[in-house]
Length: 373
Image 1 (cartoon, rainbow, N blue to C red):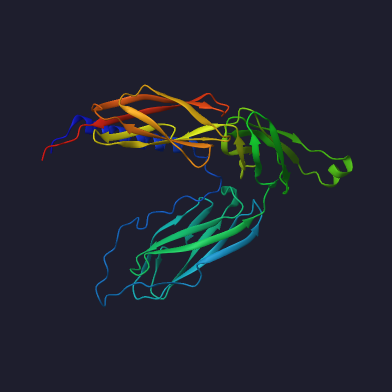
Image 2 (cartoon, rainbow, N blue to C red; image 1 turned 90 degrees about the horizontal axis):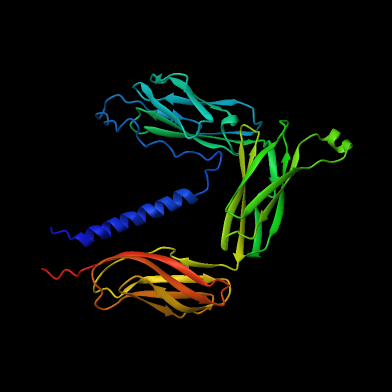
C-alpha cells in the first residue's frame, strides 16, 4: 500500500487532537471527591479454572447473608461483622482471594479451606476513619474454587455520624452580569465532639474568592454549646469568566477523616462572547467543499462586521441563525486550493457585543485527491 506524506500529517493531527482533548479533561476535571469508591477488582484475578469432570467431587459454596448494614455509627467506631460461608459440596472449598472496593473495610477468613459440610466466617471490619464520606457502600469480593460461584460479592453499608455539616451544601448565584461583584454565604457547623477548625480555603475558577470568619455568640450560648461554627463568604469577582460557571469552594479542615469538604457553586455570567470550537482543526481532500463551522455565542445581540484570516485557500461565510445572540460561520475550501498543511487564525470583528473581536486558531491539512486505481 502506498502511503502519502499528507496522509501521515493527517494521522499526526488526529493524534494531536485526541491528546489535546485528553489533556483538557485532565486539567479541568475536579479532584476526586473524598470517599469515592475505587473501581472493582478484575473479574478473574486468578484465571479461569477448568470445569471438573462430570461426576467428580466438587465444592459448593452456600451463603445465607450477602449484605450487612451497620446502621448509624460514630466516626471513630470500628465495627466488624461475620458472614457465614458453608460448603455443602463433596470436595474442599478453598478461598483463593479476598478484595474490598475500599480500604475502609478489612477482610479476613476464619479458614481458607472449608471441608465438605464445614463452615467458616468472612469477617468484614469497617473503620470509618478510612472513609471520607457519610455513607459507605462497600463491595467485598470472595474468590473460590466453586466452579458455579468463583466470585461472590458481599456488601457492607453504614451511616457515619458527621463531624460537621455545611448549610447550604451548594450555592447557586443564578444569572449575574459580567464585571459586577456579588456574594453568597454558607455556614460550617460542628456536630460531633471533635473540635472543628478551618485551615484554609481554595476556589475555582479564576475570579471566585472565599473568606471565612468564626461565628461567636454570647457567653451563655458559648458555655451551653461550645461547638465551632464558621461563616464562609463566596464572591464572584468582575474577572470571573463569562458563560456557564461551574466551580467550587474547597474547605480544608483539621478533621482527619474529611480533610477537604467541597461546596459546588454555579452561575450564568452574562456579557461575554465565546466560540465552539475554540480551536478549528480540519483534514480534507482537495475536492472537499465544506470544512466545518465555528459558532459564536454572546449574551446580547451582535453582528459580524468583518472576517480576517491568514489561512490560504479557505473562505468564511456567515450563516444566518434564528437569534441575533448566535452566529454560525462556515469554512469552505476555495476551488484550486493547493494540497498541504495550513495553520494560522481567523478573526471575527464584532459589533454591538461589548467585545471588538474574537480570534480562533486554525490548523489542518489538504490532501491531494488520489486518482489512481
